Length: 183
Image (cartoon, rainbow, N blue to C red; front, side):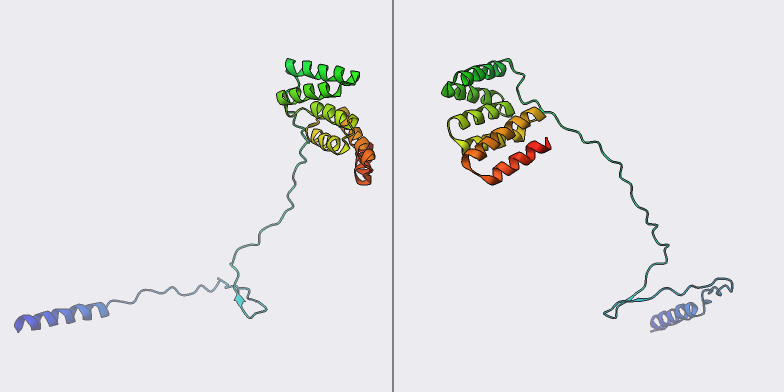
């Protein structure tokens, strides 16, 4: 029992000691410091918004320097000696009126250089002469996607114009005429 009483007494002393500690000092508000009333913004739904006490962000227009247009030239394979030879053969067969041989050699050239606009130009010209204007239009359109020079684009648009005239497609004719005027 004595042990119990001593334990209770020591607990009471500890608790009494904690209560007798001085309270922490509170700083008195400075008289010179002025508290700004924060801006209170009320939303239309009744929500109160308390913005941060930060200065507003200075908004300046961003000036983006104009970038020069770069036309990317790609190697379409037209510099290959075998391609050059096949294109020469295509030209000679086309000039002689041997359209099937010209088409075969143009197809071989296209296998060597599939992104060459020149092969599509010859294939479109051959299709026009074989009275296949829809095929000629499609081939010329495909060639335009690979054409890098203005003269090549003009030739392909002329082929599209002829194909449109044969098909009596006013939309294709107008599109080709506008493109030719722009070039």
